[in-house]
Length: 99
Image 1: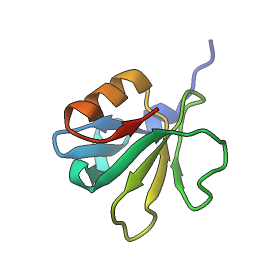
Image 2 (image 1 turned 120 degrees about the vertical axis):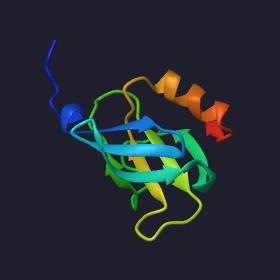
Image 3 (image 1 turned 90 degrees about the vertical axis):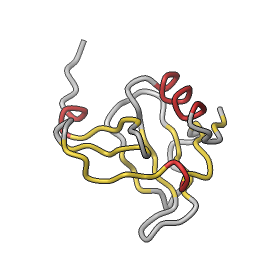
Image 4 (image 1 turned 60 degrees about the horizontal axis):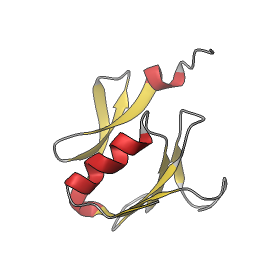
C-alpha cells in the first residue's frame, strides 16, 4: 500500500450548500453550490473535456462536474474518496448524476 499525500493537501467533500474544495482537509477554498451544478458524470476518457479544471488527487474513479455558470471553467474533474457515497449524496440533494 502506498501513501498518497495529495488528499492531505487538497480534497473535496459534500457540504451543506455545495461541493467544498478543501486545503489541508479543513480550510474551504471554494464551493460549487448545488444549484449551480448542471450534471455530475463519471469521466469516460482520460483527457476529455479538454477545457476542464482538474482537481484530481487520487488514481480512483474520476468525475466531471458540469457547472451552469462559471468565471473560470464550466467543467471540473474531481476524484472523491468514495465515488459511490459521493454520487448518493448528490442525488439526495437533487443533483443530476450520470454513471
